[in-house]
Length: 231
Image (tube, rainbow, N blue to C red; front, side, top):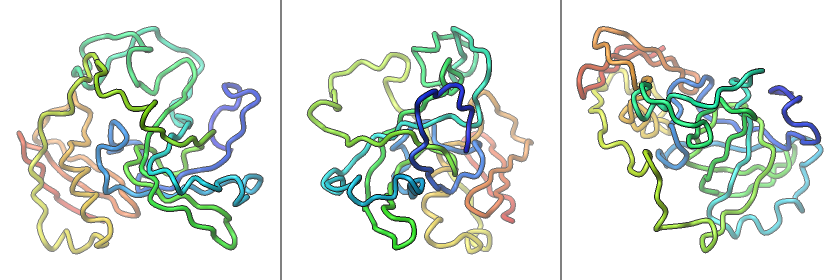
């Protein structure tokens, strides 16, 4: 069982999601930003019942309620430094989506690509646009309902607009060929969205990011990201 169960008295992990992010580094900062990222949700044995997902295929998006299982801590702070603001401005924790919260609970809206019934695993949900680390425990799944969950006139404070820039990714063909074809588009998009902490800007620093079974090493100089090595 993942995470710290003292935060979730009475709640049970119903499933885990499998994605191409074995570590936190590089995960999109919000769900839905990179639609080409795919993941699969596998239920725990107790919940591998096809009846539990009957009718879910009629919805195009679902909500995932999950745990920041790698950031749970005993203490909390009433303010945090959102990366979106360069890490220099404090905001109230409840005015942000920071993982460092009194209860490490995450909420993501992802596209439901299909529901499959596996002979051994039972229902498996295939999703896209997920912003979760591989193995993240999921506590609940709910359908996204457009007429109540969508608010086009909503005001979103300091996060009212998406990032205004994308990096140009310099990816030598001989390195790109090392990436499975099914993962190339999503990897390039992840890199273009700048996986570095937003307060880091050292053009000489070599960054390493795990993606699937690969280790990607790169540098960023200005608006250009150069892939140096893939292992």
